Image (cartoon, rainbow, N blue to C red; front, side, top):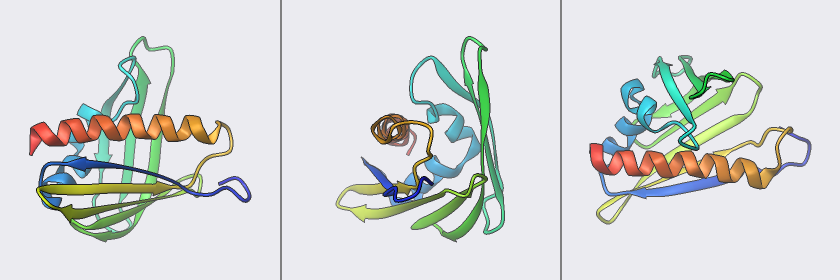
Length: 141
């Protein structure tokens, strides 16, 4: 995380239980359905070892094949279906909570920004992915 950078928070409301929201967020077959910020990207595969010390690896690729990368980290904390923390391989922290609210779940992620892209662009990109997650969770759960 860049020096003096404030963590970024994004959130979404999904009309499913915390357990349903958790499943849509953590199951590899679900992640490949929603994990892209725009239609010109996709997530062709994901590996999830859902336990403290387990690894999370998601392949992100441009649909035209021009570029791609792995988003990788290790789970540091887990309290299913309420919260999980992922430490990315570059040292940044991603913490997600699943809080029951009325007829659904408020899912909130706070993450450390990286130092390459503007903060607003990072927030917009992560929120776009989160919006796709919420839409998927609403239909899956």
